[in-house]
Length: 238
Image 1 (tube, rainbow, N blue to C red):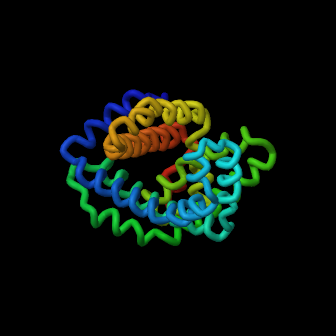
Image 2 (image 1 turned 60 degrees about the vertical axis):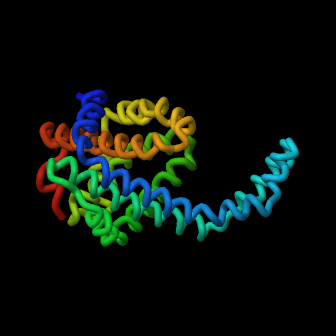
């Protein structure tokens, strides 16, 4: 049984008195992501987008966006891989918080970067399969992206598991719960819409709250799969 409200309420309790590190991690991730977005911002500026917007030139703005979107494939891949490495490191912090009420440290986040190779292989493997499924139609691509959504949690918690095996386990534990996971993501939209009205401050509360909730959902999915026999304990070791 997927209990969305339970995971969200528990996330708030898990974060009580321990907001500092998740907020700091969120800040660092935002800064790093901002650095990687600088080339895109420069290209957008050079394309004349901002001038078109100021002059209310709708078609000119669209043309500028079209020109700026021609980011090289290599740049896109580097950004995607960097994001995956950061994501896996951050997930490691939330996994640790979910397993113990003890304090977490920023060093836990830094240590997560040691998993850069697994993060790189993981995102490339995931991207390949989502891309192939998307070629069929958009909907299969979305469905499969949800099926693969637990892959990084598995990689973060079980260091011995291979990338391909983590994907197979993710597919198994999300069976019957893809819609639940989709609705869980949608349940945060209201908070996300309010974020701009707080000058972005709400973002640093929302992201830890979301990540902690997703980790709780992951644990529940894994527990259900183990109890039903769809996943065996030996499957979680290489």
